[in-house]
Length: 213
Image: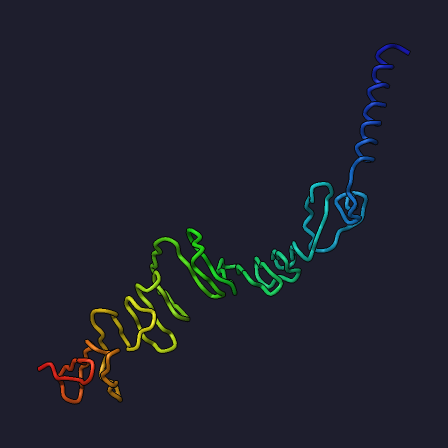
């Protein structure tokens, strides 16, 4: 045997020993891992293999891929849309790219003084709308700059408690003549009323409606 043979033998033995050490020190404790696949086994359907820092693992409850329907679920093993977050589908994105959530949406800078609840939309900077903009509940701009009361169908400017259909606090309060004329009182002082019956405008002086002409 020559020197080259011994050198080759030593290298082969070294490689084998190194491989054994790597396998011996590998900490893949999850039995349904990639190593199981290599050995001819299988993982749970929908498994997304990931590293937890020391092992290769799977967790269908928290990360699931529905290969039949091309859907990804986070905290949802039965996603009903292309992308789902939360077991109750708290946030979803469908195959057309439409997103929906049962929580609130905050865009822009986080402001601690703003208290948001489910269904709220907070925009920290300007927003441009190029199509219809639909609000299904009360609508507020800033704090008291502009307010829409979806229950009473009142609009307030500089007030979040409008008492008439269009309420501008501190300057002018205007509303149309309805089936019943509201009582003129201190709260309505300065309000204007157009009477379809008389064809004239009236102003509230704090106690009574007075014709303006």
